[in-house]
Image 1: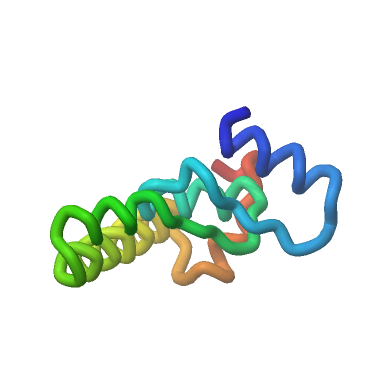
Image 2: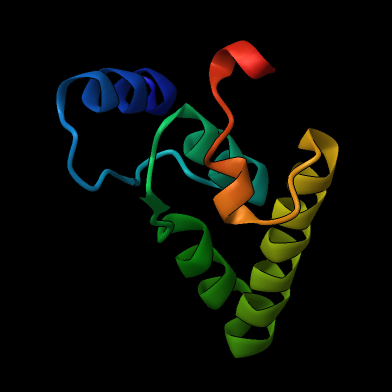
Length: 93
């Protein structure tokens, strides 16, 4: 099941904290997951790949790129911060 579908189905069923993980590869994936209903996101595989390919420096660069992508996603959606982004509903997009 795609992550986006899983988030939507879980959010429709469970009112508690929803953590999106699995299939989250970029900052844009984080933004999409939050808009779809996730409360937080987890990301491991791309961080491990960065660690294996270039150590701590590569991880820092990956995390900086991810943060930049999140900021870009917020800007493109007109949200000032994550709390404002979480107010978006799919019908608003």
